[in-house]
Length: 402
Image 1 (cartoon, rainbow, N blue to C red):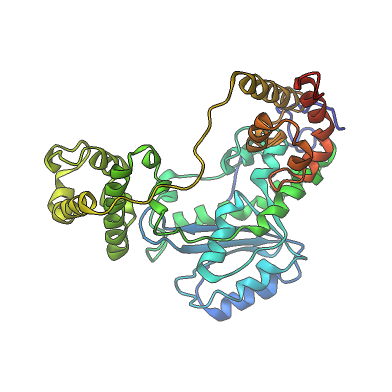
Image 2 (spheres, rainbow, N blue to C red):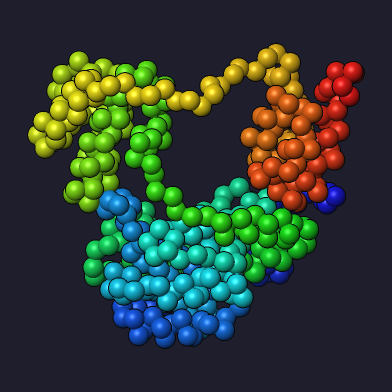
């Protein structure tokens, strides 16, 4: 097993080359026609790796959509306008090509969005966030990584990041911001590759990134989507029935005006109303006067509908069972085991072994073989830590079962 502790304060580049510099702002035109998109894809067809990013309008539109796709290869940086280019399916040739590595920072959303908006699948992903975590870094935002690893400073304006990317025209500041998100990704990937090879963790990262290929966008079930709101499951059955009625009203209103649900009314207000349905709307904490003027009548109707609706069916899923005293001791020992490995390797404990697996083993410590075959446990985790975990589990069993 690899057992060298990484010094997370070391620089990644050759000695004497790590210095802070400001990233230049290249003039990057906006690709706005199908012909231009085909030209870009042709120029990248022979690339070994392409950096990719997207910008969406989740803070302004509902449902949200990809409003910009950024690509970077050895031939340059390209910004593609999917609002102007009506058919983005040719991009799928690049995304699905297993011979071209797609270098993406925090790839989860991008992979899901490509599938959601255009039905495109992404193969051969290299996620620089994943690589950073396995290199032992704790600040994994793109700006922080570029400064720490490459000595490059890029503009990360919060106002630009949160702007409405669906609005046109995009100004030069927005275009420069978008270009900066991919301009140095390939160099960042190369730096991590060298470091992870030295640490013996390249295969670990490769397995994690391979799992990203299986990500798909799943449309929320309208019958249960309300349960995803934090605090909804703690409501009584009647309160949940009211809450679902309020949630459905807000969802319909958000779709109708193409604005995010929080623009209509906050989760906190809906939860309060569900638990306190007799409170006059004028006295509900956080319910603004403008909201009352615009949505007070339909909001009140949704509240009454929820109070009069038949109770929702009880969730048939088994309820959480508290741990016994012995199980709590077992869980503490397993977490201690994981933390010790994490400290030795300078890694986040959650990378060492999945929490959900440790929780199952807490209740069934004899089920390690089944656990090793579970989907949550990675192959590299089985190889690196499986034997050690078996030892610690055996030490926790009563003498008759050990």
